[in-house]
Image (cartoon, rainbow, N blue to C red; front, side):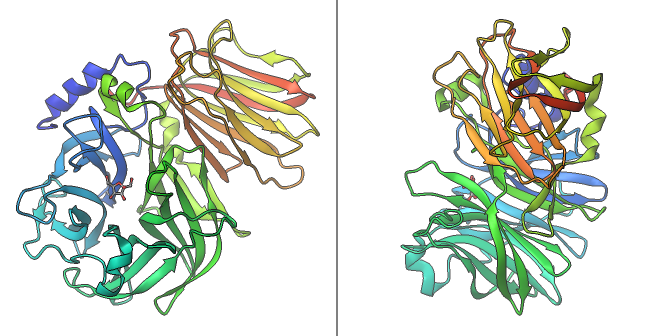
Length: 489
Ligand code: FRU
């Protein structure tokens, strides 16, 4: 339990020497974390709540952990915000939900289990402690006419204000049909009127992306008349297919008119994103980065789950989303290697002798050339036995993360992932890479985001190298920074 700042510090210190534990991504002091919850920018502080099992590094009786940051980079652990409590509608767990500013009163709407219902809590002390609303649950389950087909799946309320009403979106499913987001309306936050499904998926078709059988964690982003829905898709009950989707469109007369949809984060580890809009008018998104190793390894390690970097999200004019890490992360930059105009012929590599670390940021700008394969190796052992490769193939315009050699441990994930990158003719290929021990995140030309996990075994797997394995490429510029840990331990 985080009962005080001192015990959180002691837990962090106890795990600090774990070579797989990230240094500048947020994660709890110990044990299990999944979704970001209740994101709110309140009086200059960014509040991050998260699905937290304080008792073990496995999903269990879920609490809401809490941390704040003045700058999106450095975080302070605060006491647990929500605890499942016998006799209440959240006795079985406090699952995901959102935070809003109700005319000066910080208010949480979250999922109480079991059964899955919507609960409300408010804070009178600047978000530190939370009072459970005595009239909970404020929504006692799916609407009667849909109840049977949902199997009781009804969770993760997202609330926003529009005109004179509060609106609430919640994730659910319709048996034999697909995932579904249900729309409610209220003036008071405590009494809700069910309106209709705002969007329903189709689990029978694969075009353009399979939308799965259940939808979780909805968010609605507003950019003038343009809206973006983000939600998370669950595959079949027993499958481990989990990924977020976006749908752009218009919201008029309480209906949603979809335009474009697709996947927006690739790699298979980023899930259940939530957004906040900050006082600069930016939409900032965090997602849960799942582990890529067996649960027994996480249990041995004493922790599981990492928060992604904060990412700015906006719709692009031709469809798709612009995705960029927040500029505030530049405050982490330490030692800098700067190189210009590196010509790499087929089979050549480039590095600096001292360019070795597991906490790094790299910006690479490459001139596009026909039929070349160019890449960056990270976490590379001196003999190359362990290495993870990020590779761009110009002919197919695909970026891949190749993990076959990422770890000598055969029991961690080694699968590759590859995704097409859209680029305008003549546009430079710009890779923005963040490496943080077991986390790799790559932003490509501000519109493609990949996140993956790697678990090198060797302590000397710290090398970094550019390479051309087919054709030749010209690297216009290469900036590499060592990044500092955010925990003062
Ligand atoms: C998504 C999710 C949510 C749920 C929470 C429980 O990862 O399954 O739908 O509220 O996690 O921890």
